[in-house]
Amino acid sequence: MLVDRAVYREGRRQPAAGLAADIASVRDGHGFVWIGLKDPTDEEFAEVSQVLRLHPLAVEDAIRGRQRVKVESYGATLFVALKTLRYLEPTSDIETGEVLLFVGDHFVVTVRHGEAAPLGPVRERLEQDPEWLAAEGTWAVLHGVLDAIVDTYVEIDTEVARDVAAIEDDVFGGPNRTDSETIYRLKREVLEFRRAVQPLLHPVQRMQDSERLVPSPELRLRFRDVTDHLLRVVEHIETYDRLLSDILSTHLAQISVRQNDDMRKISAWVAIAAIPTTVGAIYGMNFRHMPELGLTYGYPLVIGLVVVACIALYRAFRRNHWL
Image 1 (cartoon, one colour):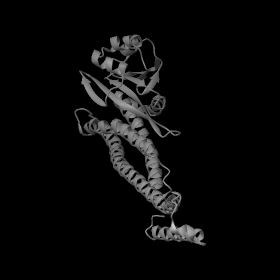
Image 2 (cartoon, rainbow, N blue to C red):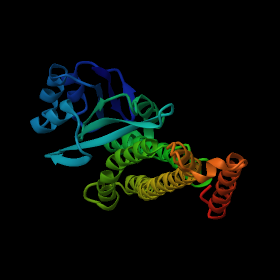
Image 3 (cartoon, rainbow, N blue to C red):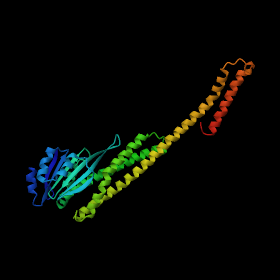
Image 4 (cartoon, rainbow, N blue to C red):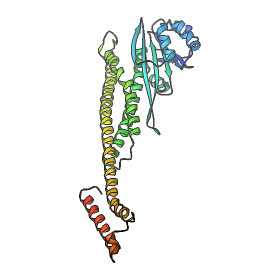
């Protein structure tokens, strides 16, 4: 689906005509065309691919989606695949999507899969700074999209930190109502978070360091800022992963300790109950010759002995913290 298409000359948006005419109008080097697509079909992408002469392999990746994070060159066109993320507050899940970009000298094509990280706000923000857009052209768009996605990573980092802290407080300082499934599910979300963030670090570092790839010093500085944000998020993710592993181990150890305590309590009560059970079983055998049967106070004496034995055993278990 075509979301938006516009021609930018001197950093200012111009009305679009046909795609071929738009590309021809910016061949003089004073503008570019920005085409935005969402979940395009082969037929919807056919005209774009034909007019811009995009490489078939990159086109196939853009249409099918589910690509790893990467930056690849196809001649004069740069192909960038990014993971987009969205935090779902009710379930604390992280929803994954994709943005794929074709960046040429006179065009940018953005292809979005999923509902995470819409690019409309990025376009609006860039259009409010026409001088920057005119100076850097298509690279300004690439930086704007990348910066917006990394800002989303930073926001999700804050939410994940809050979830990890809540589980940590519950396991180490509270009644520990957290179950193993909750900890494992958050650990899985952290792993999904890492898959989106960590592979992006190396390509962005290349952009900040390579004068050949990014000639503009100002643009390299802005990519350096993006790298700093990414590094901080990556470091936090490593911390969350280790901390969740420790929390899960502690939680399982606490469950084992509670089970041992329960077994000791059960064993103690069984031992106490065994005394009257044993005495009752002996007298229930109905032997004809039992000397105790002739005692006048035999019954209360036996009951008293049973009670005393049970109380003594109970106090012994209490002293050893079994009860």
